[in-house]
Image (cartoon, rainbow over all chains, first blue to last red; front, side, top):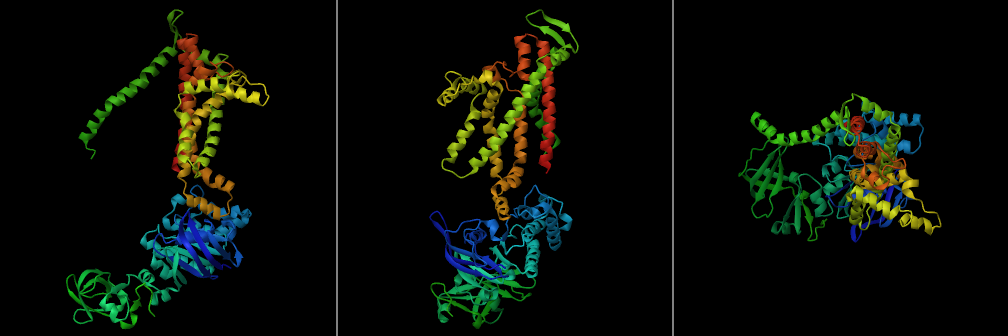
Length: 334
Length: 288
């Protein structure tokens, strides 16, 4: 079981309130991702749940038990840290066995659980090495192994992939998702990378300045962002925002169009502009277009092999039903 | 850009320093070796010719040799134990965020800046004096008979003085080591269910092992040669005659340069054995 409920949880450091009172419900078995720009309080929120920071107000319920004053070790949660936080003087085996040893399990049971975790994570060949002799991805797996053996109610991940290179990150992303499918345990995952959030989450929590901007499944957030911040944060490349007369035509202060919802054509379209930078990725091409009359350049996704270059004239047509409208306060107009 | 040319220029530029250092080391070493094979009594006939290994045999068979070795080991061992244990505790304490941290740290380091002679005098006259010392007052305040520290408890007194001098050094090195510990490791251990004491033994202490070896290595080398503290306080009496002090007495008090030099050669050998031993430990530690 791993149902976590936050009731009016708030956190202040001295006079600075980093997290105003917030409510959040995390259901058993869910993969929840906290996402937001750096300094938005997502790591603090995770540390509050872990018990590494004390809440300034509110209650934390784990499986309907009040855990607000329970010390971290007794909450039944396991955490994977950004720096992995492996114990450098212990072998992989001892690292993974550490929580079991602290819990006072007998040696045979420790060995059995460590072997099991090592098998799940492909670490069997590395059990007698020290963390210093492992690659980044292997260290990451050891850190996950140390979390698994405790058989926790929920896993907490604090930006676990940010120290890995791009290729490894994609691989580890898959492995963590697979692990979640296999174990079915609640996982809370903190990242600033919206791609990680979109690909892994059952439920995304978008945070800004300690405030929850929106909670929903990845596609809900993509289709119906509640405000301009979420709209700009979810989706890659970023949504284009247009203000002024063009927005007023749609009865809004700002309209937003995603790069993938704009048709580009060399000859005809609604808006006319010139191509600035073009990024050819093979499967896709992204054009940065300076549209006449718009303040900001727009990003547009076109098919793989569109032959437009820097300085060419381009015509753009947004898909009418995919235009997002926002009022002056940045809130979505339904 | 280490071309042949620049390398030879570099050698030329370094030469004066190297020659000076070599001379500084080689001249006294050669002279010590030279005198150790001679019967040389400056006030009783001067140079009385070569005597082979006589001085070496006499030095180790003298009745004061083994007590001196023992005194040396007790002082070195005692000071090391006290400074390492208290150093770790003090470093842990100073690592805690507290009001006036900067001032406290400077105060803790202060004893290291006091000259050995001065600190020994201060301890001897201000604290340990059986009549006017602060300890004597303290003892009398509780109705106890003041201890004449330097004669009744000479060894503990000297260990105490020297520990006081070296504690800041140990604390400083151990404090920097503690500060380099990744706080996430401690948090991970906390989440893994390790209470504070276990966190100390399983995480902090292993992390400090390298710093502790360095403290032991450096202190041993310096502690083997402490002299001023003994000279000022007991003058080598009451069982506080270390090997260094014995050599001093042979050369200056007995005016037997040859015998003292032989003792000096023993001291060099002893120091080198310790150094090799400790270098190996440090080397092994640095590999891990």
